[in-house]
Image (cartoon, rainbow, N blue to C red; front, side, top):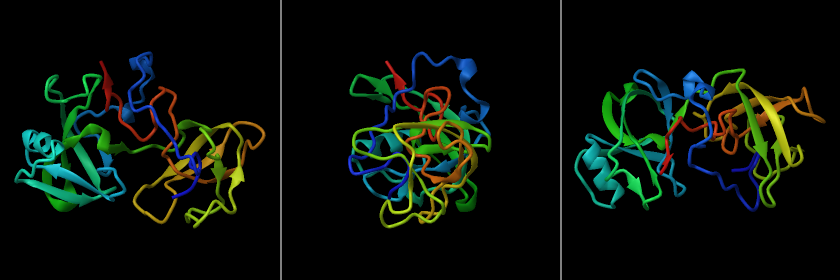
Length: 219
């Protein structure tokens, strides 16, 4: 997959929520409160499915490479509804450095309720949201004229080392298309519109735009 903030060197994102980001700076749609809507992400490693288990303990067992009953895989980007977020400071600790809260969700289209890590979910990003991208390594910040993801980076406009943009629309449900339609707000490309990936964008709260607030908590 290519696009804004992606290139040969790839992108390294800080997954830990910024300790300096004030609570008041967190927009409502990024807060994982009961009833919040979200999109299902994936388990990583190149797969396009996410594992959801019938209990939090079964999901924790799955994280330890066990094979508990009650766990199912679902296609990523299914709409889900958050019911509650839980955190066990012992079992949800990772490498003694940070916590990964577990969230209970309902998947209406599959009539399934279960548990997974909060950082596997993506919030519903509203139009008008401001985002920023920064070039990392040898990657390029590219803006594409079409939502269709090209086989290579051909046709993309090079935006330089950093850029600010306003979200026009966000739709992660089509693997073949870019999920972000944006308008550039910083010079020299201010006013131009195009298509990019949400992956790599950071919000005004300093957290990756496609991650819920406190999805990963630094100790």
